[in-house]
Image 1: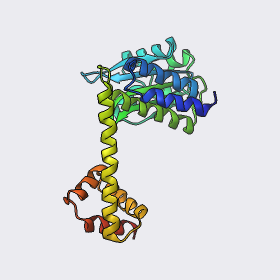
Image 2: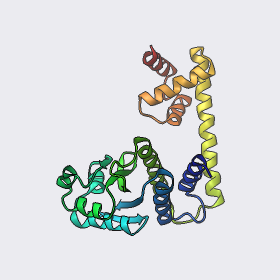
Image 3: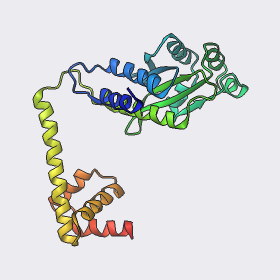
Image 4: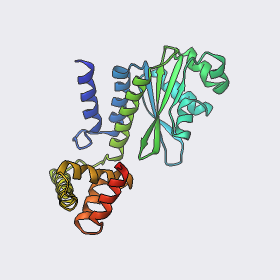
Length: 249
């Protein structure tokens, strides 16, 4: 199996929250495994926020990763904790160097002794809200490349969204049908609003579709919500057309 196939299977496996065997703990174990197998990390640990605002280790690819996570929690320092607090990724390369030891005086030497000379911490987030952090452990002191880290972040983002949509009760066939029909209805509303813009602005359908998307993006609204407002006459065609013209003019 090539890397593209691995990625395709990984994203499908991380997003299928309606599967009968979907389990949030297994999901995080999968995420850790994918970051090792596909991204190229040596080991991975995952922490998530508790109701009291602390962090709890949820998954670790092996004993070394679990040890580093535990050390961060016990010492109160480390890239993962910094990442969770700030909501930003933290790259801690060359942990044996003085700069890293100065920043994390207790954790850095212990991580290096365990064989990890670089650590990357990536936020687990949903709608800009941080719900945990992914610790990527690497034996190479230079750590992972920017492309590899972007891939790891993409996997983490997908898993975080899947966790938020997890429901303990298995989805019924009617639930799936309801979601499908909601998507079909939304598409119909967007098509209707696009047609209205095309007729009112003397535009081709493709151009009218772009106008609708430009307005939604500029005003921070969902495309479907803007379309519904147009169809219900709660939003004037002229307003949308003029706004889009100003954005592209």
